[in-house]
Amino acid sequence: MVQVREVEDGVSAKLGEGAMFLAQFVGGIVVGFYYSWDVALVACATAPPCTFGLYYLTMITSDTAAKLTAAYSKAGGVASETIYNMRTVASLQCEDVKSGKGP
Amino acid sequence: MKSTSELNKSVLTLVWTAEYDSHLEAAKLAGEDRAKKIGFANGLLFATGSLQTGLTLLYVAFKTANKIRNEDDFTVDSSGFISMFVIQQAAQALGAMGPTIKAIAAARAAATEILQTIDRVPAIDVTAKGDELPFVSGQITFENVQFAYPSRVENPIYENFNLTVEAGTTVALVGSSGSGKSTAVQLVERFYDPDGGRVLLDGKDFKTLSVSWLRKHIALVSQEPVLFSGTILENIALGKQGATREDVIAAAKMANAHAFIEEFDKGYDTDVGDGGGKLSGGQKQRVAIARAIIKNPAILLLDEATSALDNESERVVQAALDELISSKEQKRTTLVIAHRLTTIRNADKIVVMDKGAVVEQGTHAELMALGGKYVKLSANLH
Image (cartoon, rainbow over all chains, first blue to last red; front, side):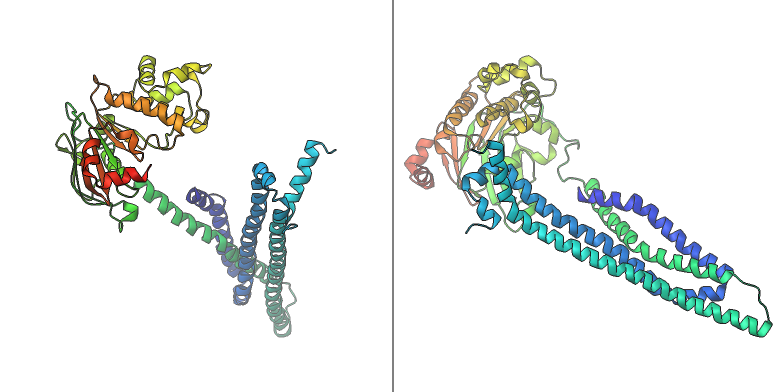
């Protein structure tokens, strides 16, 4: 079931990761302002592009991975469909048609 | 000459290449796209990081220069660098939280859906308590029944359906598909409740009766028999709780199934395979009939029980059914849905249905004499 997998995805590694990132974020700000508040302020002013940079990288990584898997599974589908139905393919003599070499 | 395996190999290669290749081409493009985007994203990450480092270092440099110029203080203060690096880490952590938040939001939505399904209370509750009759004679009455399937509310099956099936008789429902004959069976099994009107068993409203008690007295044989993985014995015994081997064999004999079961090496302990795959259609149907009659139901529902079979199997199964229906010592109410009219000629009453209403009813002879819809239906089928 898709929903069960989605729940599992959300409460397993992702939940721990989320806690880690949150701690890293809050801890970083606190430590940064504690040591040198003025430098921290300057760093914060220039932080948004940095945030976007990593957001974009993580988004793109998972997005394109899904697309790649989908593309490969289509090829795999054709291969297994053909092999499982070899007799039909052979009796119809559509090997060439299927391979694009025939009419 | 090529060996068979070599031949197979070359055929496979031919078939594969094109369609497989075209999909691989798509996969290749997706891979290239991924590489480009990840490259760009990595570049962006380092560029923004460096930009931040650069700007902050510039500020630290000015600050240090000012300190040297105004206060003549040459001590190195590292706290600025610590601040710079930790803020950078914090900013990136914020960015990395994006997919995490997305996944948690998706999980929340999915969990809501799952919980809704778990918490759903069915309209017809098998576990609910209800009345039980001390004795079932088997009279079924449909009284002004209105009904539409929940998934197709805009398309009502019955607008005002009335029919009485007298106790101990065999009544056949015939009509074109969509005339509502199978729906009658669904209502008697109480898979659904009517939207209006009532369905009565011996004069008592179905809704007031206990569902589990009701189903104990009703047996259904449907068009596509479903057997579960296990032995023939186990499958037939499913029909009645605590059935003994003798009960099973008696039921199988009544269903005309004993002979073919005995021919198997393991007899009643033969495994039926996944979904009954090791038995033929006719054999499966006879096992299903045995499973239905083992509980000696007051009401037997046959929903096109022979229509999925070939001629020979149909004849054997029909013979088993005829024997069951006509057996004198065991009078039960039988509701037959039929698409082949020859199989129901001997019914006590034949009901012709059209668009959810009864158009004609009577015995075969009466209906033939009437010369109406029934005659037309039987002419169409021959």
